[in-house]
Each structure stands twice: as C-alpha cells, then as structure tokens.
Image (cartoon, rainbow, N blue to C red; front, side, top):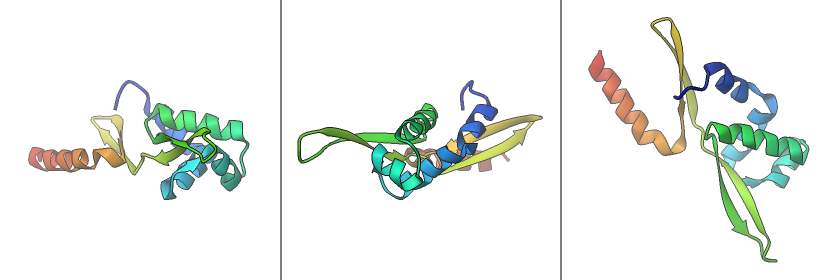
Length: 115
C-alpha cells in the first residue's frame, strides 16, 4: 500500500466506532449529525473517526446545499474489503476500494499469470 504499517491500518479498521461509522455510510451517504444519531456517538467522535478513515481513503465526502442555502457534507464508504497476505515472512495489506474494482481484476489476472 504505502509506508504506513499494517498495524496502523488494522488499528483504524479495528476501532469499534470507526467500524460503526463505516458500516452506516456503506448503506447510504450520511451527514455527520445523522451518523452521530444512528451510531449513538458524539459529533466530535464521529468527526475523529471520519478523519481516521479518510487517512486511508476509506471514505469520500460530497458537499451538498440545503434548502436554506447552508452547505453540509455527506460521507460515503469507499471501502469494499481488505486482504492480508503473508509473503516471504512479511505481512502485506491490500485495501479494495469502490473505485479500484477494475484494478483488482487486473491484479488478480496478473497474479494468475505469475503462477
């Protein structure tokens, strides 16, 4: 993935509140306030978890305009699955995101050709 450790990634995904937020926005995009209510979390906790998830590009956001003209963001999951492999005594993690499904197919095809 990059130079961030597998422990950092797993700690992020392993955080209970982060998983709750991720699960809620995997069903449909939601504003932070709606996430706080649905997950029974404080608004600052929701924003901290969104920030954690965003660090690994596991969420996306879109700014919307309310009828009264106010702007707000809705968050959506950008995470489909994680695969952890052990290669040459080294653990590697690969995060599959919504936008890289064609990349995943290409990687699987390349892996099949390498065997």
